[in-house]
Image 1 (cartoon, rainbow, N blue to C red):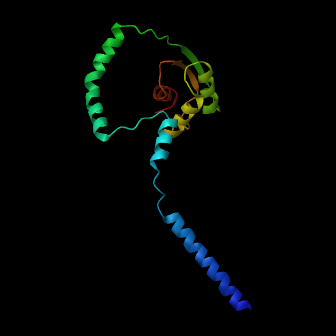
Image 2 (image 1 turned 30 degrees about the vertical axis):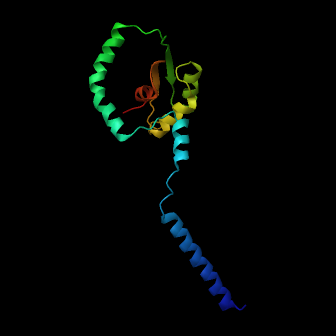
Image 3 (image 1 turned 45 degrees about the vertical axis):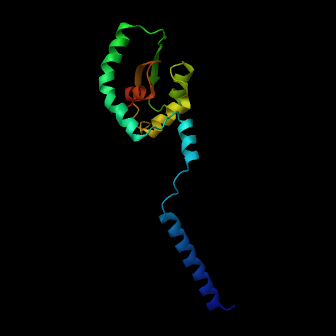
Length: 149
């Protein structure tokens, strides 16, 4: 092989690699399989419902909320609610206080709470301070409490 044929061969490899790379990155990602979706839902404790059922539940929610609230007020539940004083200092990571909340029995899983904060973009908006967190609060309520709007 002489210089010219070697350069032509190298140029051909370079062009073909560039074309294959461009087509790979430009193509849309493959849709997840049903098994992957079910696994994801199970890992995150989520449930999938049909759009019609979701709309029906959503439209029924405003009517059911006042009744549920009045029922909660009139009948004390048998569940004990714990209050924990959470102190977040500047520089604390979400993993640190999530583990602290799990050890105090406020949340079930520090990892799940941390995943929730990451998924909803709250990890960068957490404000240092002192917060009273109750065991009956869900991840969304705790996230609203500790993060700036």
